[in-house]
Image 1 (spheres, rainbow, N blue to C red):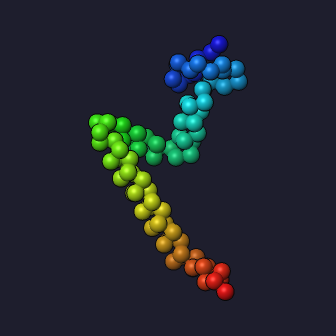
Image 2 (cartoon, one colour):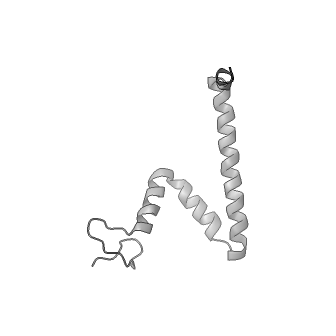
Image 3 (cartoon, rainbow, N blue to C red):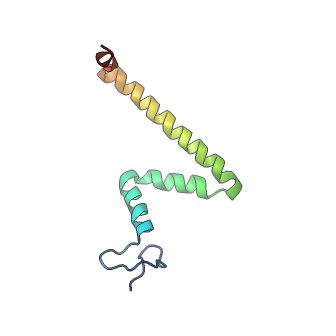
Length: 87
């Protein structure tokens, strides 16, 4: 039985992969979001446990605001097609 290359203490039987299920998920997030994963980990996990929940909420709100701004910019660039669907 092999241990996970990242966490080194997986109880899963690893035959085809070097990573356990949890570590594969982390690896997937890294491939999708790259540096954003490190930023979130540093900003959230470097706090006391009691303050982590507040920071998580703040990070989620910030992500939502960023996505809303991106949508507004896209509507300005490409136009608002919602009028086409309200007929």
